[in-house]
Amino acid sequence: MSRLAAAAAAALLLVGCSATPGASEGLGFTGGDGTVTLVPVADRQEAPVLAGNTLAGEEISTADFAGTPIVVNVWGSWCAPCRAEAPHLVEAAEQLGDRAAFVGLNTRDLDAAPARAFERAFEITYPSIFDPDGELLLGFGQLPPKAIPSTVVIDADGRVAARVLGQVDAKTLVGIVGDVEAGS
Image (cartoon, rainbow, N blue to C red; front, side, top):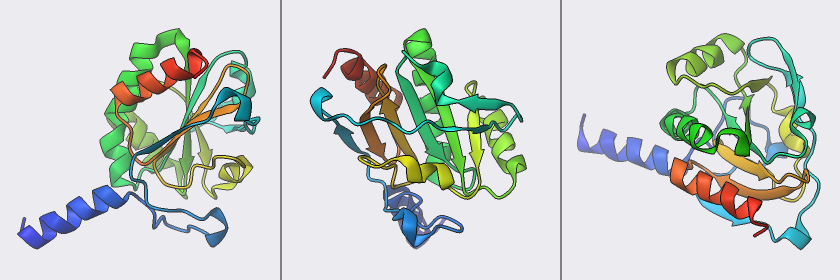
């Protein structure tokens, strides 16, 4: 790989997948730089209920996990940073066990087949809602997932508690969930 090609690849990884296939200006996607935002308990707003069919064809809703912190990861099979992040999410889900529910939100994949292949390749054990048009992303008011990948942590009371724009590693995500559990 030439130096120019390597530099371009590195720049793409740093920027994230802001130019998503079919992205609309209404969603206002930006580049993800790994910025973590924690919302003080008193300022948290109710999270939208995300519901739909999983990539396996089963119905699911974040309401199914009421009373438990929920980690919602927004991803697409076409997104290089999502592929780099996937093993970290699997690791975080394993470390957290029953302390948090994980739900993927597969967006902008027009066909579920590449998304299912992504899940198999990275051994994703938690369900992902298939949201090809990105409609479910519009429900986040206070702290929207404006980059792909993005990760939103919903506290046990159903309120948006934290967001990471761009890739997140397992250690950071486990720490965020711990902070949310502690009421930080």
